[in-house]
Length: 401
Ligand SMILES: Nc1nc2c(ncn2[C@@H]2O[C@H](COP(=O)(O)OP(=O)(O)OP(=O)(O)O)[C@@H](O)[C@H]2O)c(=O)[nH]1
Ligand SMILES: [Mg+2]
Image 1 (cartoon, protein in one colour):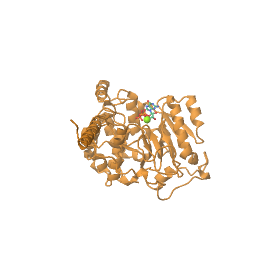
Image 2 (cartoon, protein in one colour):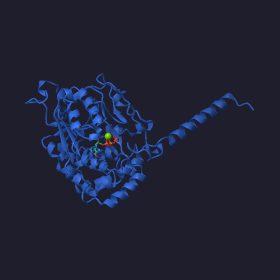
Image 3 (cartoon, helix red, strand yellow):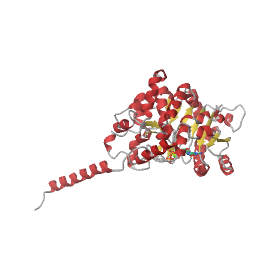
Image 4 (cartoon, protein in one colour):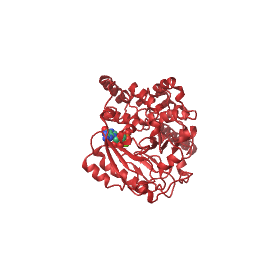
């Protein structure tokens, strides 16, 4: 029996619709940046960004900017540099990746301003590491070992409970859960790095990891920008976290707030932290936290915020609660929650003009100053990674600059 052409066309269309639905339901899951196997459907996600602002022409931030001059010559007395450093926690084995990050950042920015590099490690740096990193910059390089009391698992962490907790985290596909050093690194980056004696006289830092990329020429002193414009924190990328890595972080935070309601800033970005409209299941699994965070492998910040009594009390509360080890609290959600609750949201700045990549995400603005990345493309990884973009929430609850 012949089937009429319109009916055939309709049947074909129905098959395509079905395939499309099945693909969306069963495509690789989301989860956090590090964790692939958590949530299997799109039900926990409501829409991508309407229009990526990185597609719009991007220039420098508005207001007074300080340009390079002779006063930025390396080692010069009476320098225009303010107390600030490029800061990298890195292993000796990551030398090649560190040199690559340095090359990018020196080319695009630091060769004009010559801020010192400060390298941190839990073991001494090798002579080769020192020699090769020194050769990658005209600026001063400092090599620091982290004191044991800042790095070692604290005395109140119970080994058996840690081992049990790791099993649960691994069942939930939380990457690096069994690596004690990863937990130590997250804790150090959250609440200890700025206490290192080598940073005592330094106020601002730009965190740099090995194997990251910088794409755009930046022709002003970003540390002066932070200072002159009264900014506490600068980010490039904002993402959702894996809720299974932080189930008790928000409950511990609300406990802390109930003990210290006076610490809440009146112009805070709390809605960004508690949003449940875009990813309700994330919020539910993280017990009230959207899981939105600034991706802290890039951060330009004022350490006075971390050194404040408010943050000191908050970090100590979290540290005692044990979640850096019994869960896998990252410095990204910890820093972000503190900024979202205890800081004026207008003191947080999106460095949209700094082209940046840490695998698998980019910040790539539309600017003639940028080379080597694709404007407005968040990721060069799998398509589902686009769902991890949390900037729309930041723009909604805070601002776009
Ligand atoms: N010295 C030292 N550095 C570490 C250690 N663990 C991590 N780091 C550094 O801390 C930073 C973050 O660690 P990564 O392993 O990159 O963590 P991540 O960015 O969450 O993971 P990836 O997505 O795999 O890059 C990097 O700069 C590492 O070089 C450690 O045990 N010792
Ligand atoms: Mg990394």
